[in-house]
Image (cartoon, rainbow, N blue to C red; front, side, top):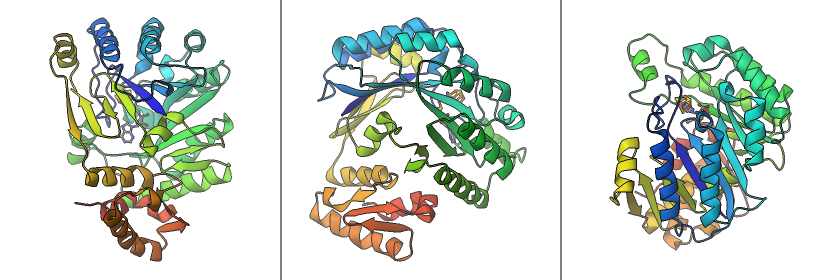
Length: 372
Ligand SMILES: C[S@@+](CC[C@H](N)C(=O)[O-])C[C@H]1O[C@@H](n2cnc3c(N)ncnc32)[C@H](O)[C@@H]1O
Ligand code: SF4
């Protein structure tokens, strides 16, 4: 099972919380797409398995590109990898980019999954986050999407946002259920250093969301999703049966993936590699055969740590039989014990997975299981 991730580093405007790599000017669009295509060709042998189970256009805002450019990228992937009708092809799309023609065109070029960045259906919240859409556009975009030929639709929602009480969160979740969305990615706000949000919190212009609210929100989300028949297959991801994202699953299972574009990460089981986080340097270095990435080879300890980080977030959890090194296995069993005894973690045979209260402090539990 292998995947390709394509990073499209353009956005219409800067959301105050975001520290993903993007620029708000599309001046270098053509050059960048040519470099992306160049990189696809250069790295055609990166994945052991040529047959792709998923392709994911993320960003930034990939839906900002004209569809012919997405088509051009897909064609070049198809020239050097094996894309079948079973390959999940997702594009992240912002509500204000959605219209019927665009989705018809996406369907025609093979896109079969949409990930819509709604975040909230509340105008006040959307405005305070500097999102480029409003609640009307959020609703109409979903209506257009569910009536399109693309049947696999996911929605991104954020929680623990400034001024977001439980009622506002509940309304947003219910809107998704009313539209019968089958997959939800629900993220607690992270305050990233050097973002506008971070500065405003430091200046006391925005109240810092608190842990207590995080717990309240997360419990509400988990209860409601469970009631609606959604599986919590990864901490932040919920879906109806058979609607898990192949792309996400590949990543959490530790399968290989090829990341293309500025700032994109790749993993082939042995090493990790990350591209330069700057559009001009990416274009320039790639086109002049200069090294445009950094990489590290993983040692046994890194492989164990990465396995724990990924797997503990999943429903299935950590399978001790998959920890190859005997002393690492002993270390894991010793360190998981207190969490098991206090109900943060449960196990079924060899699988150890987080309970609800464990999910809330996932980072703390993961850290306690790390080999330093
Ligand atoms: C990088 S964005 C790209 C998708 C698209 N540009 C959008 O904004 O909808 C992917 C998702 O990450 C989440 N996200 C981005 N920054 C975040 C933050 N600081 N805290 C929590 N979630 C965040 C949002 O839910 C967003 O939909
Ligand atoms: S959240 Fe999405 S739209 Fe907003 S700045 Fe980040 S990548 Fe761009």
